[in-house]
Amino acid sequence: MAPVVDTLRLTAEDALGLVERREVSPAELHGAYLEAIGERNDELHAYLRTVETAEGASIPIALKDVISTKGVETTAGSKILEGYVPVFDATVAARCKAAGLTLLGKTNTDEFAMGSSTENSAWGPSRNPWDPALVPGGSGGGNAAAVSAGLAPWGLGSDTGGSIKQPSALCGNVGLRPTYGTVSRFGVVAFASSLDQIGPVAKTVRDVALLYSIIAGRDPYDSTTVELPEPVQLPDAERLDGLRIGVPTQIESLEAIEPGVRAAFEQALELARELGAEVGDCDLPISYRYGMPCYYLIAPAEASSNLARYDGVRFGPRTEAATYREMVERTRDEGFGAEPKRRIMLGTYALSAGYYDAFYGQAQKVRTLLIREHREALATVDVIATPTSPTVAFPIGDKAADPLAMYACDLLTIPSNLAGLPGLSIPCGLSDELPVGLQLLGPQFGENLLFRAGHALERAIGFDTVPTRFRGART
Figure 1: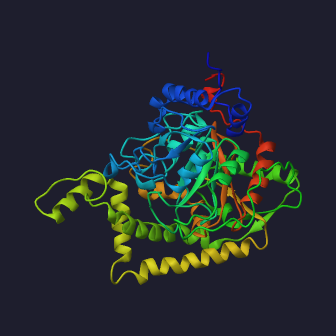
Figure 2 (figure 1 turned 90 degrees about the vertical axis):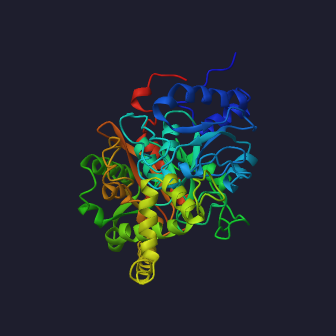
């Protein structure tokens, strides 16, 4: 008889302990998560497809469906890649495999990772485990929902404007968007190449640090990657003595931040003070005024270039027509959803003759100012703290018809992403019985600092990551 495994409460670190002590085999653990997926995935739609066989000597992992997996369909949430089965693993998938991790399956995503709610997936929306009537965030809502609902001990997602941090906040998980260049993008379906970064989602900061240690480091297949200046350290700090936390003064005037989110954030700051941290102000005026428009010129411009490869010739299905031009037009029209089309058109316009300097070129200059502004702020404080998302999870369909309202969901995550800096989101409380995320931002290669601060705060906050509606259940 297979041992009973409580996947709802099991952290990745605890799961590793079970396997190492031989209390459960990798195949039995894989099977326990598949059983949980069978019970809850129909409601949550976290996974697009699962892998039944455990080919590894360690614990399972879920991968966002933008990460290429050899022999397993990879669609990036889009009809234009339907049926595409890679013949190779992305570097991060290969490193997980080399560490003995077993692939549970591919999780749902907004199409080409373009979205903040996972409603843009061609395969239908994912749902929030805390309340299935609500979104789980995006674009990595499938990953976040899977970890939150005990359908995976941890997962790998991608973060361009906030797609790891924001859904982690809305689902009550811990999520890391690493320093740009510390994790390979080879084999990852590209959205915006100067912004995309792969990172972990898990139940605890230590789990996130452990998975980061597996995937980080230089990759000869990705020329933008670098070696870490120091090894990844699993945090064990319980105090924050001497840590200088800066809170941008601009946060106070941002009306988009819900009162309940603001209250949970302030409580977390008070806890930080009790743990010995110094909490003060810092200034990021350019970041919060121009970060959003800057991002929505640079990211669509890069998307316009990256998505040009999907033409019905090399990937996915093709719509036949009398001429090559008509075939490409019809294939793209039928294959791409509304959001990729919107961003492709916006990006193509920004790159077009006569507009390049006024839009894309100007946005790159603003990005340089954002980088400089963050560097100057982090010269006076050790980490910057903000809410991760200005709101808690919202109803499915609530913002779907208003792209600008949806884009505003990433108001607080975008600026540091443009600067290429690491960001860690941890759950810091509830508002209207829904999770609120605390975002900690550090200097370039400051992941270990974020892990130490995040772990100490996590222990002090004592947040129960199991969604309220599942408490009392065991699977």
